[in-house]
Amino acid sequence: MHGMAKLLQLGRRLVKIVPICGLKARDLNARMSQLRAATRLCRVWQANGEHEAAARTLAPVYATFTEGFATADLLEARNLLAAVAPTQSSAT
Image (cartoon, rainbow, N blue to C red; front, side):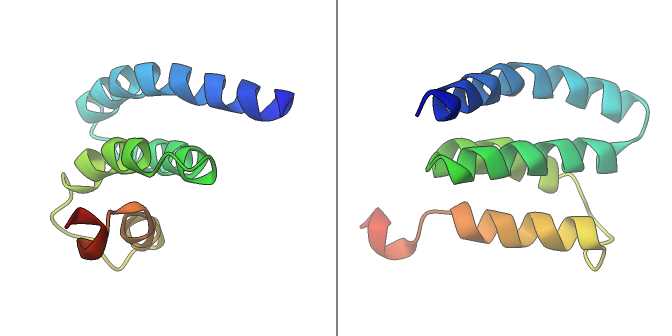
């Protein structure tokens, strides 16, 4: 469990860093790099049962795309978002 605690602590630190990286990525017109970073962090949150944090991390980045949805990176992000999104039955 000690390793899991370290992983969660790292994830929390990354959540603070990702928005900063995101600004730089947008400035450089490198949203795919931002998407990959958000996808990796989302997987960390998902692995630890933090589905809301996972969705909150990836959804805004994914939403910036208007094309290229057949690419591997965007397909992976879409599938990951579907996996961490709350279901309709749990919302009622």
